[in-house]
Image 1 (tube, one colour):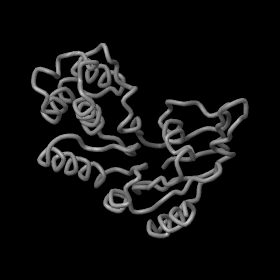
Image 2: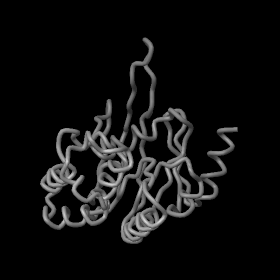
Image 3: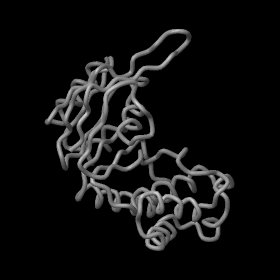
Image 4: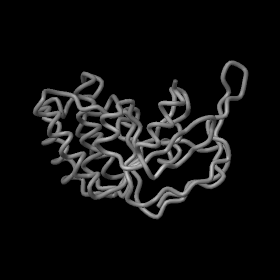
Length: 217
């Protein structure tokens, strides 16, 4: 269960304060895979980062009775001057998981060979995605936050990525941001629509998508 209490967040933009989340009160159900829908700039990524604890709201709080991931796909959580392996060890210590087990999982998953021990600033975008995605999937969370994650690599690697992601979703809840309605329908079973600082919850995913698409048109 994730509960949002009186949550508000705004930013200064071109001399004006823009409200992203406006006094939001919402309890998200346990064990559901929620699609977070909304137009570009609505604040979807900001909301995920607040739920993850990476941003502080202006007011209000987030309460959770389970473990919550950082936003899968967020690359800024990894340090460019550290190697992939060093970043994985750092994450393992932060989340209190077995360092060797996580390291073995990511090294096997990412398939980077000796590059795994080189600084991440030398990685291509695809190589970086393999390490960040693999690290996220290597830790079991009650709720995964997923922000526009895309698998990089050939068809076999993409298939492996989808399989491990589907396995995690079978045992955990999720909040997913993705512009692909095909991906949304594949992994989500209900929806949230963010508009003008407010969030509507829909138990029926198709209804959430219909409202979202009507809003865009």
